[in-house]
Amino acid sequence: MMRPEDIPAEQRAMLDPRRLDASAELVTELGMSDADVEEVMDLFHALRRWHQASEAHSEATRRFMKLNENDMRAVRFLMVARREGRIVTSTMLAEHLGITGPSVTKLLDRLEHAGHIRREAHPTDRRALSIVVTDETRETATASVGRDHTRRFAVAAAMTSEERRAATRFLRELAALPVMDHSAPPVAR
Image (tube, rainbow, N blue to C red):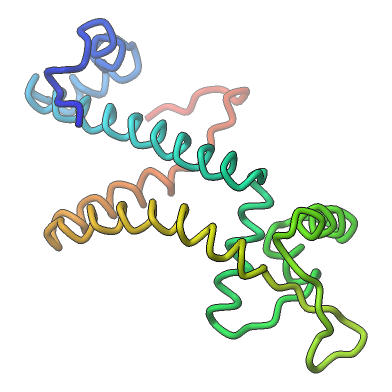
């Protein structure tokens, strides 16, 4: 794990909000001490490293399973549905993924051809087919994605309740920030 003092000075300087016009004004306005600013920089550096690591883990799993991102989302949805005893149709999967009927058909054809899913007769609607993940894919996904998820869960489980609540609050507040329209004129604070 990289400690704050292990971050190269040049990289650390690029994260320093005191060097950027908009955030430098905020640092002054909030009356933040240098120690406060350093803690914020450490927090955002850790967040950046987590984002990079998360992307690397996801990419490694997709490469291993030979699936693209939407394929992985479909397999994950089918695995959860199976575990919960729910029957999934192509319409449900299209809705979950936010894609059209023809796109879900192509996705299912690709997954079926690769041996990741099966289309089976729907148990209550003879006009529909149910989509199920194959045992082999479920086992492979559990061994790879499941193992990564278990390691992340263990990190969160080792934190105190207060630490988890603080991290959750921070991430929720970041996620709640609206996407900015950068073409719109700036709004005065």
